[in-house]
Length: 458
Ligand code: ADP
Ligand code: MG
Figure 1: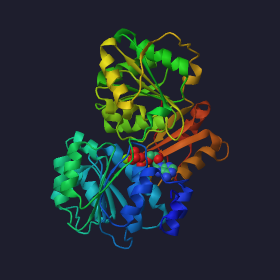
Figure 2: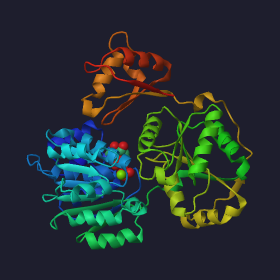
Figure 3: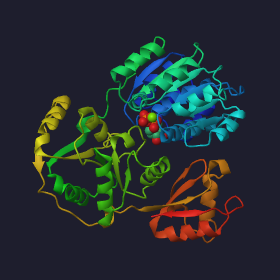
């Protein structure tokens, strides 16, 4: 049974899932949704990108008492951008019914403004632990009627030192509730925590899943001095549509990205030092194809919903095999064959040995030779991102933007790509051939009766 229609979901929900083109459940959804609908606690593990948000989102929305304007569900996420992704996905899933109010409460936004929004009671809160705890302590957030508590990306919460905050938050919640833990990995600390917090949980684990067999893995010897040239020749040889390059340090991340850009490539870097806004922006521009290369550290990339990639490059081999498996699992999804290439030094042979041991494989270190670089052109992104300083809170819809761009004398609808609407900003991808024109249209035309500030993201 893996079709949503086979679950006892409401008609409008099924219709909406259909509109979202969700027909087949992902394995984690198939295993968790029925159990959550029955009201049981779960400890669920599945890799990034496996559809965990909908796994808890669908049953949670079905259980909601829509007419009751009290906080009924709380979803804790480790970072603001994950909270943004989760609330976005929940909003899409919630479209089937009116009057579902989802509120995102995270740091970096004025506390008072958020407290004011809460005044108009939301039923679902998505937030980061620090901000939620603060509001509970200030008694501006009340969990008395909480039914469902979700801990998303539990392993990352742990990495980021949030477990103490999470425990405190839980002390504000009623004992009678359903609690769901979702995590990409299950370190011992998470298992112990789950024993304290969950009631007779069902352990649901989807085999680490990134079937490494469908991923073509290669390991090249490369001295530290040759690494950048090595990356360039890999890119030119394979001409991937989208690539993520993992570095072990923020510093090499920054440097590599800068060097690639000097050579005329288009890369963006995400690492922990970037401000939240910059990270979100980089991720959006990568996902909407305004950049074909993302250079990232593990911490910055973990948990993020990055679309299927043609190529994963390990600029450095990671320190842990589990991290390696996690990184390469970004490619080769949905039955496609992926390619993962690691650069390594001789002294790292033991790391490759550990990988082989874990995967039961027998990869060997190769030397660069057989590469045949092609032209730069097809490595360049097809799209450009333009942003306007108005978003969901300004009641701007994707249709408004599309209308402005394509109405008489405008550009074709097919030249507009992904439109990402955040609270106070929208990012619009347009085909690069018409990007300047799109910029002018947005500058000169009104959207919802007013003009916005336009930024062209080069
Ligand atoms: P995770 O939290 O496990 O990393 P997400 O919940 O972010 O994964 O989902 C990854 C992507 O898959 C999202 O873009 C989501 O919209 C999409 N998705 C989820 N479930 C389905 C489904 N059943 N069919 C098609 N796409 C899905
Ligand atoms: Mg997730």
